[in-house]
Image (tube, rainbow, N blue to C red):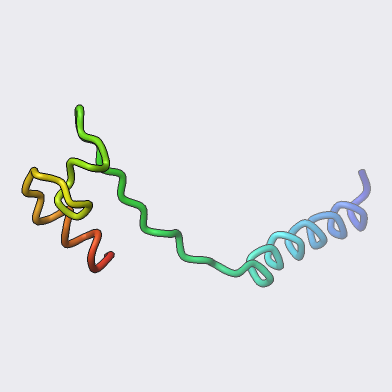
Length: 65
């Protein structure tokens, strides 16, 4: 490969690589919490009139994060 073509290809590759991040906007990832419990239904939690006291889950249900 002759030298001018090689230099042109290298310059084009460098220009494409440097322009890649300019148009890309960073979007924040959502905060997701998954709470796993064993043998608990939605009616067992205190926030949904359950009989088991769950103050922290009640606070999350009431206020969100």
